[in-house]
Length: 213
Image (cartoon, rainbow, N blue to C red; front, side, top):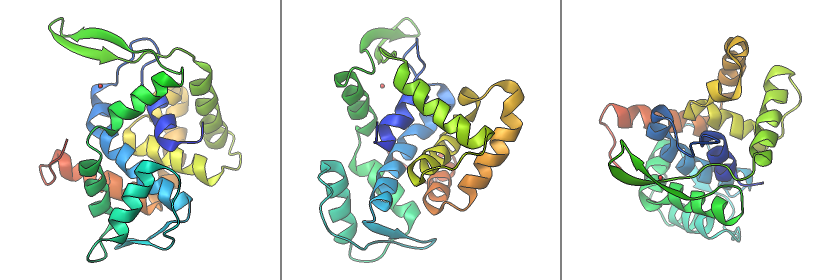
């Protein structure tokens, strides 16, 4: 499992119910959009600072979504902020969450089940078919946070996304959470894209932004 979006969704989906909590639902689409930008940063295609996000390498990534986003940023008439690109990415990939959930179904990690919300509205749930990938991801994060093992850049970004998406409580026991929150918050504090994601979520909740299992 090498894709940040897949890992984040596996952590977010309830193992048996196949749904997302209400708190996570309000944040997940911004976090997934931000994760695409983080993927570009990890692949050294973009340079990010507090006021700008710019293309530094136009080489295709061989990932269709990332290449669309890379071209979108590269063709922008002016340099834009990370927060702008989080919002723009969310608007460009309107069905990103569903597409990635279905991708995880195709890979055999999730099942797709038709159900009803409030016993009335038809909806789709995605319970885990195989618990091992999620357990591996969770264990990797716990080792970094609780045992202070060295983190790879990709795992560090995933941990910061966990913070932005409000998933800390699902990964740690009650007695571990205070310590875990402090370490995760410290790790995320200097992460420019994560702070842009959080800022965009807060703006959306206050009505400053609009946009689109």
